[in-house]
Image (cartoon, rainbow, N blue to C red; front, side, top):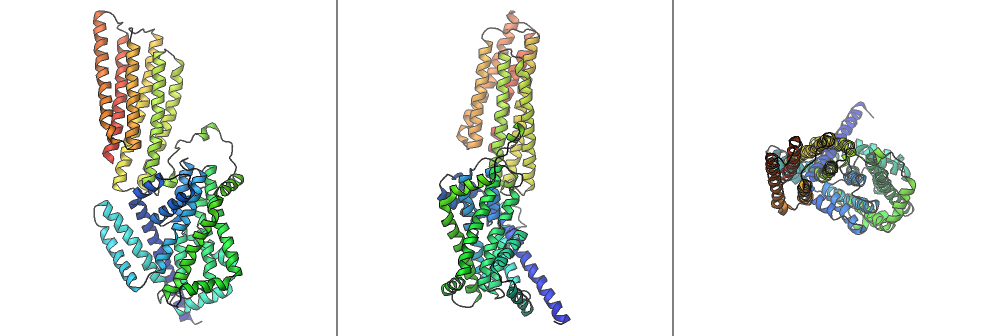
Amino acid sequence: MTANEILQLIQSLIWLLAGVGVFIVGMGFLSDSLEKSAGGSMKRLLGKISSNRFSGVGIGAGVTALVQSSSATSVMVIGLVNAGVLTLLQATPIIMGANVGTTITGLLVALKNDFFNMAMYLLAFAGVMMGFFKKEKIKIIGRLCSGLGLIFVGLNVMSSEQAFGNPLVERLFIDLFSVVNFPLLLILVGIVFTALIQSSSAATGVVITMVGTQVLPLDLALFIILGANIGTCVTALLASVGANANSKRVALIHFAFNFIGTVLFAAVIWIFKEPVVNLLVSIFPGEDPTSLQMRVSAFHVVFNVSTTAVLLPFVKLLVKFSEWAIKDKPTSVEEEIPLLQFADERLLGMPTVALVQVKKDAFRMADMAMDTLEAAFDGFIQRDIDRVEKVLAANEMVARVGEAISDYLVKLSAAGATFAEERQVNALHNNVGDIARVAELAENLTKYTKREVRDNLVFSEGIHEKLGEMHLLLKEQYDLVKAIVLEGQKGLVAESDEKEEQIDEMRRELVAEHIARLGQGKCRPENNTVFINLVSNLERVGDHLNFIVHDSIDSI
């Protein structure tokens, strides 16, 4: 090989790498924009999760089709399992369905033609232009268009005369695959390549392009495709690091599913390679690029659908295997109660889902704050000084959970939340502040308990009952707040507002009655500060609950 030919070869390889890079960037743009634009659809799909394995497969395929990434779906499922939202039995069919959903990219790659390519170039340009608009939705759609267009720009760069179309590159790969032609070695190539680029869709797209340009024989490509399905498990395995045992089991099931499928198909193709290749050729006759590429894409679809069909009846066995392989480790009490039980960093790539989960944690924090309020109130009524330390200890945990939620919300904003999602993030920041104030008000009640016991304060007959009524109104208001914010029952807003007004009115009445009793000499003057502050603090709890409702409603 002459110096000029070596230079041409290096230039072609650089061109080829550039094509792969553009393809992967396009996949990233497409996946990112689809996650944002399809957030509502994913939320609805995830809301339909049940123990029915067929619906699980459908949900997995649907979500993956929306985000164009089985890795993203797998990571999201691991996050949901880690948060306790999904069980292993529910997660396993979703993982299987994700493998089916990812085949759509291969079909798109295989079906491209000159007219389609020109349309994609124009789409990429239009997407860039849409990025200059101020409206967030138009920018997301523009990023989606750019991503889809760049995928095909990258594919065309790879198949151009400067890359795979160069006779020197063609000869290089033909010589390479004349040596690297052992099935197990080809599967290893697929595993390593996919693990490096972290996308089975991208790896499959490159293989399909190589077959279309005839630098890679079909019979060898099939084994690389099988290896790519194992390589895509690396993302899920990495995502499970640091997660709980069940999350690690999901990653193991994902690996086991693809490994078993690869072993079964590799054995069949190894033994019946010629009949399999002939069958694909007979279904897609001709030597044009589309026919060549469709053979690989069709095999990819058949592999994933067949593996799912074969292993779906054995979901329980896969779960049992994962539980046998990964044992539950004994943990300390502090580790058993994570600060965030629903939100998970693996969900940050899907802001709509992450918002749903972190909102649940915010109300877990609110439950804790309301529990401390009840403990503090009961301590005051029962003159129980022992409740004071318990309330203070509980409030420390409330503060820690609040800090964890705030940190998560900051990360969620940095992960590329849309303007509409950012409004919800800001509302949740405000909610966390209001919940923290409820806990602080509960702590104030412990101070009044100390004063009550220390100074032996005694309140007029019937006062405790009226204070109990006020506290009960707060509990009723909180139940309405949860229904409105967590369940979306906006029709209850007026009722919640009415409860808050009743609490305000009750504070005014109790203070007026107290002042009247003072004037009549029926109440000790030293009770004044404690009583007025107590009812004022209870009334302020109602205010903060009301703020939570209206901040949340206004952000939607």
